[in-house]
Length: 123
Ligand SMILES: Nc1nc2c(c(=O)[nH]1)N=C([C@H](O)[C@H](O)COP(=O)(O)OP(=O)(O)OP(=O)(O)O)CN2
Ligand SMILES: [Zn+2]
Image 1 (cartoon, rainbow, N blue to C red):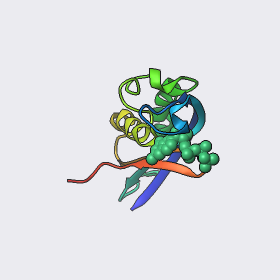
Image 2 (cartoon, rainbow, N blue to C red):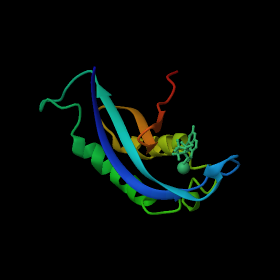
Image 3 (cartoon, helix red, strand yellow):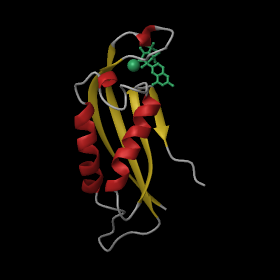
């Protein structure tokens, strides 16, 4: 298998509803996002798919969240803007734009030490 990944980042504020502790208060992160794509074979150019295809899929999603209060931006007006929910939301948003390879997972870092990954269950 071949695996490729593209990273991007955005800055946003959030708070966790129902959280007992400091994260119930408004605060911000520089979120890092990584999108991982795989394929068993390479195309005629020797690529899984062009990094550009992943970058183009990810950019509009990042732009929707950049410099916002995430709690005001759907779906995070309804569900908590945790790293886990961000990873799943980004995965589902970019999936229709990834063709000819498998969208494996999306990872979201809230800080250099803390990250969540969403990968759909098989079966
Ligand atoms: N499983 C998760 N746990 C937590 C999340 C999350 O998205 N998924 N998010 C938070 C908060 O957003 C918080 O900003 C991060 O909390 P925490 O690591 O406790 O705080 P710091 O980054 O300031 O790290 P310190 O080690 O306290 O300096 C909480 N948990
Ligand atoms: Zn936080």
